Length: 153
Image (cartoon, rainbow, N blue to C red; front, side, top):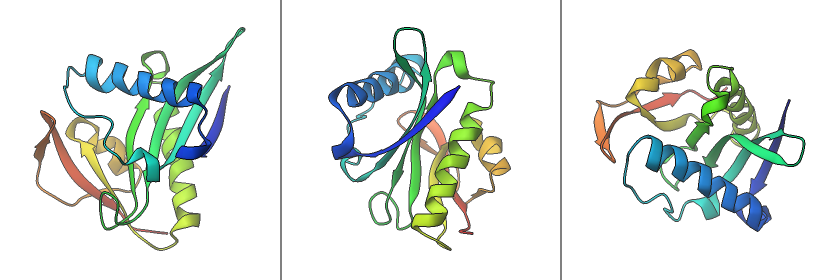
């Protein structure tokens, strides 16, 4: 069972922020073997969506993403840093967290398109969620990416 939590940066506890940064580093830096600056000064303006899995003695971050407002990374609102931990992959959790984010964006920014910078190997995942290619493939932090846009509801 996953419990969803939305938090602005200043609402995150030290423990929650540490867990977010730890898991992002585990996946994006270590697992993907990518040296990049994760602390990019955008977390402070982001809404953070966490999917927590409760265990017997504590809760574990199973999925995460952040939503950036318009004019922070792109002209449009954006979703980024999407992840699910290794043990949660293939369970539909990535799709579930994206549906949570898309529903929130539809309320916050009705009718406004959403732009993402998608890792190329996840392009079909995002297409299934209504995103279409909006740029040529480019390299970001040593990984092929493509900007994708989803029209606002």
